[in-house]
Length: 114
Image 1 (cartoon, rainbow, N blue to C red):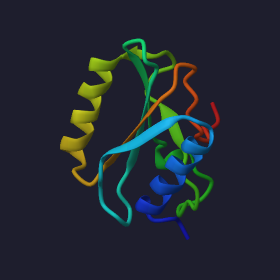
Image 2 (tube, rainbow, N blue to C red; image 1 turned 30 degrees about the vertical axis):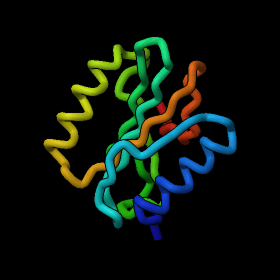
Image 3 (cartoon, one colour; image 1 turned 90 degrees about the horizontal axis):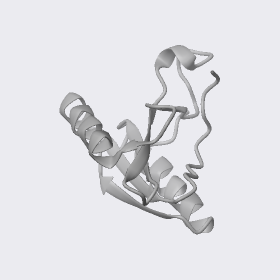
Image 4 (cartoon, helix red, strand yellow; image 1 turned 120 degrees about the vertical axis):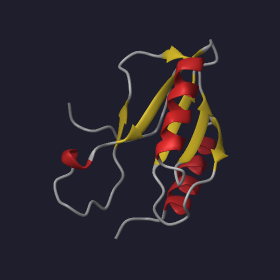
């Protein structure tokens, strides 16, 4: 059984806090199953954005864990990331946005296979 989005986000933020990385919920989405987007601000005007992995990367049809993929291999200017987030919200108004700040780009997400 997959964790509710609200519980996953709370646990993720606690993990960030434990490592000394600031993180906050910028936008609350659907409590049960809203998609979660994680923005990692690099504090230099650039950021990485991690989106939910597509269903095709999972081994079964009802995944238990949450997998994320970067939308770009390299950091993007923050305005580009913000534009992408606005598009995602228009597409899915139940989406969550979590933002962290870390110069080294730590994200604490399990990334999918290449």
